[in-house]
Length: 179
Image (cartoon, rainbow, N blue to C red):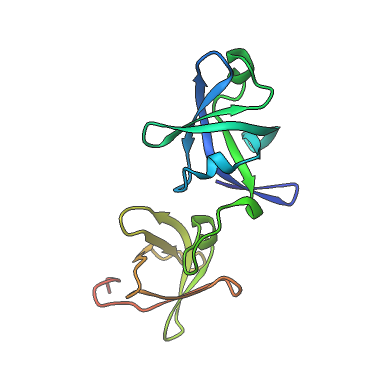
Protein backbone atom coordinates (compact mmCIF):
# COMPACT_ATOMS: atom_id res chain seq x y z
CA UNK A 1 0.00 0.00 0.00
CA UNK A 2 1.31 3.40 -1.02
CA UNK A 3 -0.36 6.61 0.10
CA UNK A 4 0.22 10.29 -0.60
CA UNK A 5 -0.47 12.03 2.70
CA UNK A 6 0.00 15.79 2.32
CA UNK A 7 2.44 15.25 -0.58
CA UNK A 8 4.57 12.85 1.47
CA UNK A 9 4.54 9.39 -0.05
CA UNK A 10 4.13 6.73 2.62
CA UNK A 11 4.81 3.02 2.12
CA UNK A 12 3.20 0.31 4.26
CA UNK A 13 5.73 -2.01 5.89
CA UNK A 14 3.35 -3.80 8.24
CA UNK A 15 -0.23 -4.19 9.42
CA UNK A 16 -0.96 -4.22 13.14
CA UNK A 17 -3.36 -7.11 13.46
CA UNK A 18 -3.65 -7.49 17.22
CA UNK A 19 -2.26 -6.73 20.62
CA UNK A 20 0.31 -9.08 22.15
CA UNK A 21 0.44 -9.55 25.90
CA UNK A 22 -0.48 -6.87 28.42
CA UNK A 23 2.52 -4.51 28.20
CA UNK A 24 1.54 -2.61 25.06
CA UNK A 25 3.15 -4.78 22.41
CA UNK A 26 1.43 -5.39 19.07
CA UNK A 27 1.50 -8.27 16.60
CA UNK A 28 2.42 -7.01 13.12
CA UNK A 29 1.96 -8.79 9.82
CA UNK A 30 5.02 -7.93 7.75
CA UNK A 31 4.31 -6.42 4.35
CA UNK A 32 7.99 -6.41 3.43
CA UNK A 33 10.47 -9.08 2.44
CA UNK A 34 12.98 -7.48 4.79
CA UNK A 35 11.84 -8.56 8.26
CA UNK A 36 15.03 -7.22 9.85
CA UNK A 37 13.99 -3.71 8.81
CA UNK A 38 11.59 -3.56 11.78
CA UNK A 39 14.52 -3.62 14.19
CA UNK A 40 16.03 -0.62 12.39
CA UNK A 41 12.88 1.51 12.41
CA UNK A 42 12.93 4.60 14.57
CA UNK A 43 9.62 6.22 13.73
CA UNK A 44 6.52 5.04 11.87
CA UNK A 45 3.26 6.59 10.80
CA UNK A 46 0.15 4.75 11.98
CA UNK A 47 -2.62 4.94 9.38
CA UNK A 48 -6.21 3.68 9.19
CA UNK A 49 -8.56 4.34 6.27
CA UNK A 50 -6.06 6.76 4.72
CA UNK A 51 -6.02 8.90 7.87
CA UNK A 52 -2.87 9.28 9.92
CA UNK A 53 -3.66 8.45 13.54
CA UNK A 54 -0.24 8.87 15.10
CA UNK A 55 3.50 9.01 14.65
CA UNK A 56 5.12 6.48 16.97
CA UNK A 57 8.69 5.65 17.90
CA UNK A 58 9.68 1.99 17.82
CA UNK A 59 11.20 0.89 21.11
CA UNK A 60 11.95 -2.69 20.06
CA UNK A 61 10.90 -5.33 17.56
CA UNK A 62 11.40 -9.08 17.40
CA UNK A 63 10.40 -11.83 14.98
CA UNK A 64 7.35 -13.92 15.80
CA UNK A 65 6.61 -17.04 13.79
CA UNK A 66 7.17 -16.84 10.04
CA UNK A 67 5.70 -13.55 8.84
CA UNK A 68 5.00 -11.63 12.02
CA UNK A 69 6.86 -9.22 14.26
CA UNK A 70 6.14 -8.22 17.81
CA UNK A 71 6.64 -4.47 18.12
CA UNK A 72 6.79 -2.29 21.22
CA UNK A 73 6.26 1.45 20.75
CA UNK A 74 7.60 4.06 23.16
CA UNK A 75 4.83 5.37 25.40
CA UNK A 76 2.44 2.48 24.66
CA UNK A 77 2.65 0.52 27.90
CA UNK A 78 -0.60 -1.37 28.30
CA UNK A 79 -2.95 -3.54 26.31
CA UNK A 80 -5.52 -0.71 26.51
CA UNK A 81 -3.05 1.75 24.94
CA UNK A 82 -2.21 -0.73 22.17
CA UNK A 83 -5.81 -1.75 21.46
CA UNK A 84 -6.63 1.40 19.46
CA UNK A 85 -3.93 0.55 16.88
CA UNK A 86 -5.42 -2.80 15.86
CA UNK A 87 -6.13 -3.07 12.12
CA UNK A 88 -3.91 -0.11 11.23
CA UNK A 89 -0.88 0.10 8.97
CA UNK A 90 2.67 0.94 9.96
CA UNK A 91 4.06 3.18 7.24
CA UNK A 92 7.38 4.83 6.45
CA UNK A 93 8.37 7.57 4.06
CA UNK A 94 9.71 6.47 0.69
CA UNK A 95 13.12 7.81 1.74
CA UNK A 96 13.12 5.35 4.66
CA UNK A 97 12.52 2.22 2.60
CA UNK A 98 15.22 -0.43 2.38
CA UNK A 99 17.91 0.24 -0.22
CA UNK A 100 17.54 -2.42 -2.93
CA UNK A 101 20.38 -3.81 -5.05
CA UNK A 102 20.69 -2.43 -8.57
CA UNK A 103 18.14 -3.98 -10.92
CA UNK A 104 15.64 -4.71 -8.12
CA UNK A 105 12.46 -2.70 -7.61
CA UNK A 106 9.63 -2.33 -5.18
CA UNK A 107 6.16 -3.32 -6.35
CA UNK A 108 5.02 0.29 -6.02
CA UNK A 109 7.82 1.34 -8.40
CA UNK A 110 6.74 -1.12 -11.12
CA UNK A 111 2.98 -0.49 -10.99
CA UNK A 112 2.14 2.36 -13.34
CA UNK A 113 5.04 1.84 -15.76
CA UNK A 114 4.18 2.03 -19.46
CA UNK A 115 5.10 -1.18 -21.25
CA UNK A 116 6.49 -1.25 -24.80
CA UNK A 117 7.84 -4.05 -26.94
CA UNK A 118 11.44 -3.80 -28.10
CA UNK A 119 10.01 -2.98 -31.56
CA UNK A 120 8.21 0.06 -30.09
CA UNK A 121 4.61 -1.20 -29.80
CA UNK A 122 2.69 0.08 -26.77
CA UNK A 123 1.17 -2.78 -24.76
CA UNK A 124 -0.30 -0.87 -21.83
CA UNK A 125 0.43 -0.07 -18.22
CA UNK A 126 1.45 -2.36 -15.37
CA UNK A 127 -1.70 -2.39 -13.21
CA UNK A 128 -0.85 -5.21 -10.80
CA UNK A 129 1.80 -7.76 -9.91
CA UNK A 130 1.11 -11.37 -9.09
CA UNK A 131 3.81 -12.40 -6.66
CA UNK A 132 5.10 -15.95 -6.74
CA UNK A 133 8.43 -17.68 -7.29
CA UNK A 134 8.54 -15.62 -10.51
CA UNK A 135 6.54 -12.41 -10.36
CA UNK A 136 4.07 -11.77 -13.18
CA UNK A 137 3.27 -8.25 -14.37
CA UNK A 138 -0.38 -7.62 -15.23
CA UNK A 139 -0.46 -5.18 -18.16
CA UNK A 140 -3.61 -3.49 -19.45
CA UNK A 141 -4.12 -0.96 -22.24
CA UNK A 142 -6.46 1.43 -20.41
CA UNK A 143 -7.46 3.37 -23.53
CA UNK A 144 -8.40 0.46 -25.77
CA UNK A 145 -9.84 -1.69 -22.95
CA UNK A 146 -8.04 -4.74 -24.27
CA UNK A 147 -7.79 -7.80 -22.10
CA UNK A 148 -4.92 -8.09 -19.70
CA UNK A 149 -1.52 -9.38 -20.73
CA UNK A 150 0.44 -11.41 -18.19
CA UNK A 151 4.18 -10.92 -18.51
CA UNK A 152 6.58 -13.05 -16.47
CA UNK A 153 9.21 -10.93 -14.74
CA UNK A 154 12.13 -12.82 -16.21
CA UNK A 155 15.15 -11.48 -18.07
CA UNK A 156 14.10 -13.25 -21.29
CA UNK A 157 10.96 -11.05 -21.35
CA UNK A 158 11.80 -7.87 -19.42
CA UNK A 159 14.68 -6.27 -21.27
CA UNK A 160 14.84 -2.84 -19.63
CA UNK A 161 13.21 -0.83 -16.87
CA UNK A 162 13.73 2.90 -17.04
CA UNK A 163 12.30 4.55 -13.92
CA UNK A 164 13.22 8.06 -15.09
CA UNK A 165 11.08 7.64 -18.22
CA UNK A 166 8.44 5.47 -16.53
CA UNK A 167 8.95 2.73 -19.14
CA UNK A 168 9.46 -0.99 -19.33
CA UNK A 169 10.78 -2.59 -22.53
CA UNK A 170 9.80 -6.22 -23.11
CA UNK A 171 10.43 -8.85 -25.71
CA UNK A 172 7.43 -11.03 -26.38
CA UNK A 173 8.37 -14.67 -26.60
CA UNK A 174 6.26 -17.04 -28.74
CA UNK A 175 3.01 -18.10 -27.08
CA UNK A 176 3.04 -15.26 -24.53
CA UNK A 177 0.14 -13.37 -26.12
CA UNK A 178 -2.65 -15.28 -27.85
CA UNK A 179 -3.56 -14.02 -31.30
